Image (cartoon, rainbow, N blue to C red; front, side, top):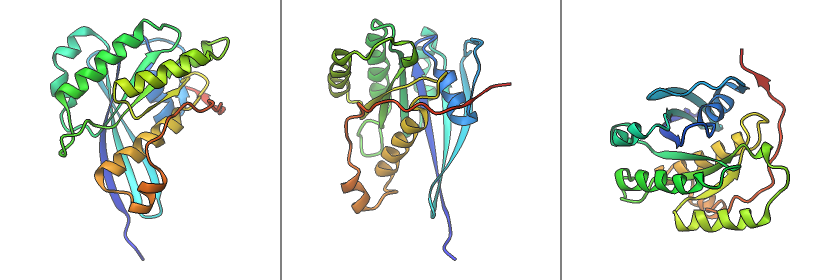
Amino acid sequence: MSSVSEKLFKVLVVGDIEVGKTSIVMRYVKKCFDQAYKATIGVDFFMKTVEWDAKTVVRMQLWDLSGQDRIKNLSRVYYKAAMGALVVFDITNSLILKSAAEWKQDLDSKLCLDSRRPVPAVLLANKCDLMETKDEDLVSSLDRFCKDNNFLGWFETSAKENINIDEAGSFLVKQMMLCDGGLSDEEHQRDGIKSLTQTPMKISGTSCC
């Protein structure tokens, strides 16, 4: 009987206040959504276990960082040893996109892999359920934004409606596994980095207690 290996990855979840970081983490980890807004003070911690394949279990330690300015002054402490990042912005407020770039720049200036490359980072365009129509110009704009700011890709997400939360998490895990040498050469070639301008998938969910 073959043994099961375990991978432990620290993942940062960053972005401005009220963009939905905690709601995304709660949906991903606990499969629920809380309508009441509660600002994160400092940092909250969550654990997510993923059965990656028959031989590998991935444990993700999610660090949900407050969007307050004072956190950026301490970010080097919180960023230490992270292997991946989710940068979140509110898709209904295009002005926040500039702030997403600033968060990514802050990550890249203070954190890198042992190979000196930036840690894998995925951009989450959250609250897509509030968009009345799909903006094709926004899609191409976000493609360029990710290329210019060294994101591996982006997802339209909704923590409330459970759109693309698991998909974004799985993509980030795959990229961290690639960086950690946890995927075979065949998998690496077949599943290379690609654009994530896919149509959101809605999945039914539950509410938090």
